Every structure is written in C-alpha cells, then in structure tokens.
Amino acid sequence: MERHTPKSEVDVVLVALATPILVGIYKEGELVHTITSEEKTSEALPLIFQDILGRYTIRTVYFARGPGSFMSIKLVYIFLRTLQIAQGITLKACDAFAFNGGAPIKATGNLFFVKENGKIVTKIVRDAKIQEFRLPRRLEELSCEEEVSPLYILPAVKA
Image (cartoon, rainbow, N blue to C red; front, top):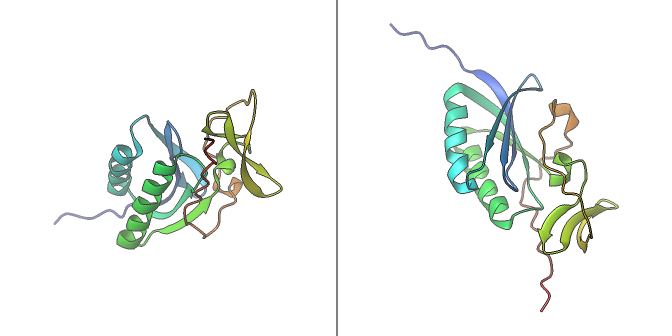
C-alpha cells in the first residue's frame, strides 16, 4: 500500500506586472525559492502554478494588483480568483509600489504611475530611473490587504 506524504504548506508571492514575472515560495514567512519567467503572463501562470501545486499546498497568494500592464493585471486577477474558488486559497493584494521601493512605474511614453500622499496618479517623469520589481525576503515586509480587485489606472491619452 502506497503511503501519501502530506505536501508542505507554503505561501506564494506573485508579481506579474512586467517582464520578468516573479514568483516567490515562502515557508514560515521566509523566501525559500524564486521562480522567474520571461514568458507571457497567459502562458507562464498555468505552468508555474501547476508545478507549485504539484509540490506544495498553497495557503495564501500575495500579489501585485496594479498599477502596471492592464492585460497582465486582468489575467492575474482572473487566474487567481479561479484558483481561490477551486483550491480554497486565500488571496491578499498589494499595490505594485510594495515591490519596487515606491519608485515610479512605467505607464506609457513619458507617463509614469507614482504614489503621492497615498494616492496613485500618472504624471510625466523625466529621466525616471526604472526600479525593477523584487520579492521581499520575508512576508512581514509586505503590507497587503484582503481587497484584491484589480487596480486599473489608465493614463489619459493625448490626442
């Protein structure tokens, strides 16, 4: 008779607002494994999560809900809500500034998303230094909430 060994429980952090996609596996709040992908979000997420679910039981997924690529935000939200319903996984979301030290995030052209006085706006930022997204070493470094709806901020388009 084959014995079933229980999978260890983990938390996952997902940042899929730009390339590369970043996924962190956390045990007891500590980052133990990082997965990166240069693939499109729609291609990468199913494969990454199939692998994770084959190895672990996911308790909570923390993710960046925006601002960033409109299509990636939408795909991530739909994918994770489906996973939440199918697997009973808890979701928590942060704005993207939690993953880049609060630096401006590229919107379009010279427009960047910036966080001013707790509000996210778009503005022209000349010579902005793009800060890459990164995973925290420990989950306690994140300030996420249970509001997981997408954070769509579409910059105004100039005629």
